[in-house]
Image 1 (cartoon, rainbow, N blue to C red):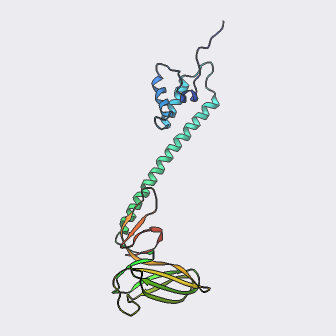
Image 2: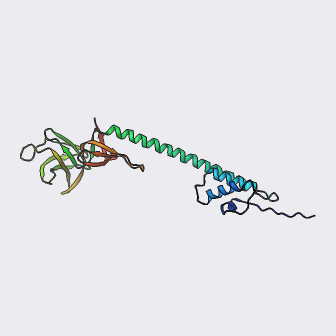
Image 3: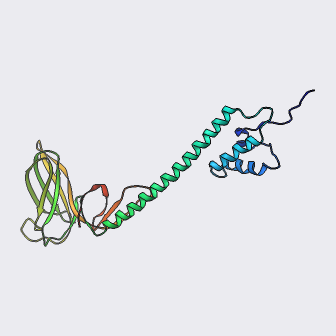
Length: 239
């Protein structure tokens, strides 16, 4: 007596390619799983499990699923679930980070900071303090210009050692008269081997507002009368 095998095995590839094998109880689940796998929606762990169960229900009883293949598919399912959990965790961390940035930003508004910039809003009725980053020992000077680019004052700081060198402007121009309050540009330079080299200046400013990046970028401080500067360029945060 011979036995004819009238069933056909179904594997993951058959389902993903929209196999024509259907049963009365599994057609709906197979269609839903296939829709997930063919791009109509993301293939998540639920869709993956549906594919696996559908494959087991429709396997050939005379040639059942190989144990090693089944274990491999279970391992894939476990990995998929782990990745899904990881994505959820990372999303939560990103949300907490954004909340932390917003809290940090709100505390900076109205505060005085010392930032890497060459411009400052100066109240010339009182002394103005700034600093220069000196890479190596040399003669340092600071040139102060108004909004029209006219030189108002040049401060000779003499020979400075490597490091941060502070300077003070009393708000007066070269003739000794008090300059008008406003925005001024500070250009620092040092002489090395007879050549002038531009130096970085750190100047005080007031934070008017803060811009928070929606893509995880750096926090930007909007300084009064000066524009934006990255938080990483701030040296000191005051009261």
